[in-house]
Image: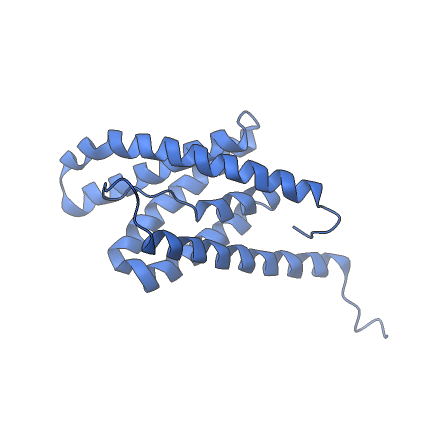
Length: 180
């Protein structure tokens, strides 16, 4: 094989990361779809488990902010087009971006576990959504709904964080068999 046809290790690593990012984005999209078709046991508007955030957390912890942002944006845009419509995508975008920034900053501080980072992300996601909702309807009374959203963000963040912890642990144990 000529030297012209060889792929450098860094190029292979980058292409692997891109492929894994695409797989995580597809997984997040599948999780979004499952969440859209399965009703929550608690019939409170806007309250969801946020299982798509599992893929974002894994991208953030396995790679970095850019890859997690890519997973998040792809999921939000595609699921917005397929399931949620323009306003659903707008709410998801505001919550998703704020959530990712908060999770990235907390992870970077090394003061919080993946469960704590996920919990803060769940709360930040709901904060971003309520901020956009109050701006769109020009009514600050939307913030009366905040305690419900904060509580659901904490609970769902803890659940997703625990799952992410075990996924991370499994990936670390299988590091030789997995490129993630």
